[in-house]
Image 1 (cartoon, one colour):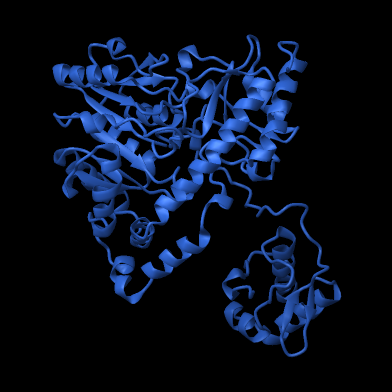
Image 2 (cartoon, one colour):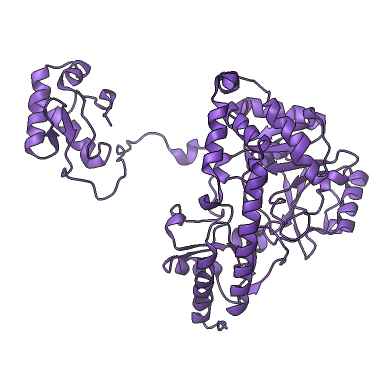
Length: 493
């Protein structure tokens, strides 16, 4: 790899001769980690022309750097960063020391960073026992078929899909497949003007909140709830009413009288995995019609049902258009895809399409067409089947390990999904537990961030089996139980 000549800039205020300045530029680039072993330096002629200095000055600087073992010369090939050059302790590009100026504590008008979101190590893949939710297992995904679809989408036939600015429009092929093949599995019938492609469910939730809520309106949410949704609602400055869930999910009768919007995970509650019974769903829809509130249904993981067909979506029972339905490919394909969809009344989709256009125009055309091919060629169904079989096996192994080690499942056992919602013995702080377990190679998700901050619990935690091999699950669960037992609260079986 060649180092671009644009990487070099002479500071006129720097001390030393021109030759010393050039030497310092190269040495600092190597010591900071910007220039790596084996990378080729610009030719002396090219660098001299770029910096506006004589070629002999650059040549002399390179010669000194060779003598100091920062560089080596390879015959007629040029100068390269030496394999034995000094290296920084860790790769982290140094920044300039800030000067007195902007007071960012005052300049920032609205803050988005939140310390209560679930914390997981960025390098979780390096842990031997990662019970991390929502992450893909690359061994279950067919890279070859995805690559074929991506290459097909790059072909001349689809070139305008890749290059054109489609303004507010989506890929017709993708919308049609969602309309004709994905939604019918949930019992949903929708016209094309009632479907909008989004950058995942998170993007869809944000747009729903922006469109439906104001500072004077009230949003009812499940408690516990997906933490990202709570943060989204906080940004709208609406009134947030947490409603405690039970074994049947959200109880409709507990909704406040002034509710304007209800956000719910009906078929698969996050994070307890509870499924709302049919009679409760009917009552929720009746109340929406009586009171005039809107229901936003986040229907994630519906494909991952191991025994029997998944329950119909709430949207499939909606006869008045009260439900805004959100689906996503992040769990069924891979989270880095960031592609989902919204199904709602035409009036809502019109506003959502306009809002999306203001922020990002539309999701990338190449990604949309690649997914369209992946779906239409049958690869999606094959992927789901692989995941179902693997997850069913892993769930059985995890359930047995949980039982063998005397741990307690707090959420619904169910027959699907990719995680267990757990409860530790009284007095166990699962945030502290999570920190201790990392030192033993185990990663879990503490549950505090899922709860209403005004009345949270530290006893709960989530463990997922989507990102860990079946053979590693028993030992990981044993280590969790062993750490809890070491606190004196329980003994592993």
